[in-house]
Length: 557
Image 1 (cartoon, rainbow, N blue to C red):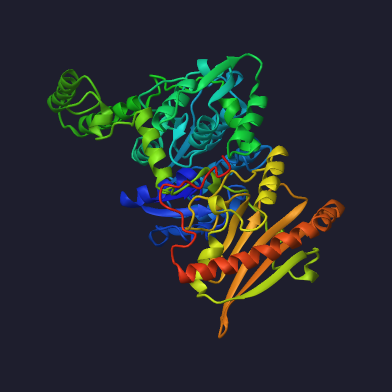
Image 2 (tube, one colour):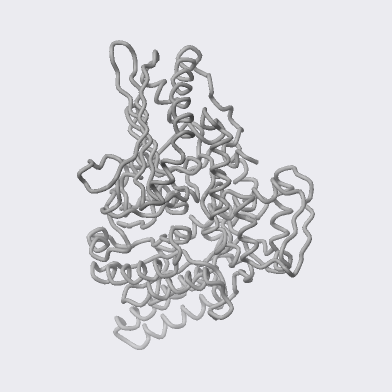
């Protein structure tokens, strides 16, 4: 089957793609920025097409020739009105799917009651997306999940940092009362892949979850056990609102407020799999529907009443013998050879991946899109924008590979080589005004890919061993980049460092010029220390290398 994956650069999509490839599907990855998939290990096994859910025309072109599509797009954390952005995207997807003749859409939404008045804005938006996708003629299978436990997931990172940083917490009362049914990312991927083969009506909803139903306090205690920490003291109080809790999460964890607030808002809702919509029930219905179709065909083709009667009698006998939808088993999960992980198992597995620096995708992978009108650091002066820059270069007596390895290892636990306390202060100020701050760290201390987060930067271009460009994501009155270009000469490697800033209005210009003394000090020292570290790496290859087991996320904790 030829399957399109929308959201392949995101947390779930980036892990689903290799799962589909291993299952024998032809995969088409649809992305606003195809370059962000260039360094994925499975890149040569998929077709990558450019497409944006906000652009209906590009979506039709990207979906052409596909049999089915996974819709794993979510604008939360990327815009102030994520519900509006998700609404437009879902409407465009429904129209495009109908136009190109898709046979199925599989969508991953959120658990929760269907009554909008009982849901947080985040969960209501997730349900609305499902309804809009199903507004066309293409069948939609909507899987609904609660908290996803996996290395790098937003929910797991929020849980991990809260427990590791705070030995005692004052929390809202719902932390101890709200029920949740967490699920491991491995199980989510399994059910998504299975959903492609499930029969679907106009809109089928299947709820998925692990075997444990717990409170959020139970989840914190479970992680403390997993991490070998003392049981955390949790004091529930009635005065903490979700808004205040969102600010608290922003300060303690790597999550920015725009992402933390909707997640915290959703914690007030019970998110538990209902018996009527359980994935088990959907899997049970599958063979029943197939048997019904077979009986109907047999009866139509029968040339006599005796044959039709025999077919009906055999069907009734089968129902009496099995009593369920499965063949020889009353447990559809076991029929598929799959048993969901418990909460403890999921936490243990996620923690081990973090410890081993084996985080294939992360919540940080999602980034706001940019338009063709957005400024770029290479724009010429006559393009109409002001470019303020700090440019430096140095000759390095080391191989170009050693120099690039040093440069591309910047940030995270290694830090920024020069003015580290100033970088940390800038990150703390960014957090206070709702930015991402520096707590995101890096996905991996050495490996770097386009789209990766590096503290409050994101990798925009990575072309080893010649070019690395980071785009700033902190709150700024303009657009900023930090770039290194490398070239070889007879004397060594010429390392060129450029910090560029496109200011917005008078405030942007005042911001840049007021910080010129600090920027001069930091950037002058930065390139010198990068050069000396590259030389040390050439002499001693293990210089500056992090040992396995040293996590680079949450480096300020």
